[in-house]
Image: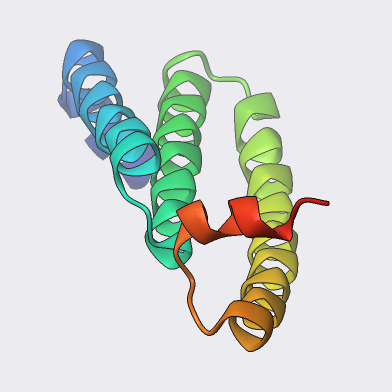
Length: 109
């Protein structure tokens, strides 16, 4: 397992930060621009994965396992979020025959 930590430290920390910023930005753009609910959920997952990448890298560079514990909890939270979110999308599709986010305005009083 020590070789994995050494392999992670070969790449400079700035590269990981840049990659995570790019992934997070793609997720934000996907949430803001797309109207398909499934694509919005995938974009939220991209943002969570960018945060997980940073937490893992900072944990390895700082020799502190707390970041990896947070990653585990974030992954569990993301799995629960997707399960509930997909159930909501299925119910919306049954009621409106569409998964377009803009149609959700019709569900108001």
